[in-house]
Picture: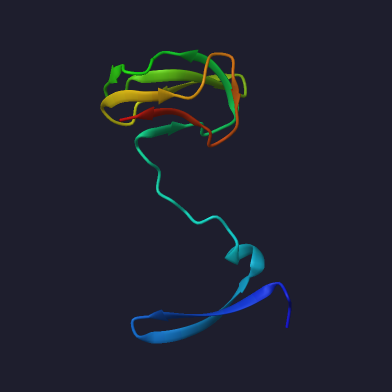
Length: 105
């Protein structure tokens, strides 16, 4: 049998099933639902403006910062009402995809 294949058993509604998974599939990063308190970069880019500071109260839909990616300015909005707990970036910083930019409380 191929060494890149893993055989697993799993139970669903009292029935046991056997299936094969590739090692790559078995080692993948598990999905985690997004946290509405954390604003993350959806694409790599450069921070053009940070419009809030720690302690600022924001409403859902308020612009928190501007991220430039692929020559386009992207206004990142608050996903909920809250207070800015921490700002992790500053103007001019280059950030990778999925980098935490701002956390709300």
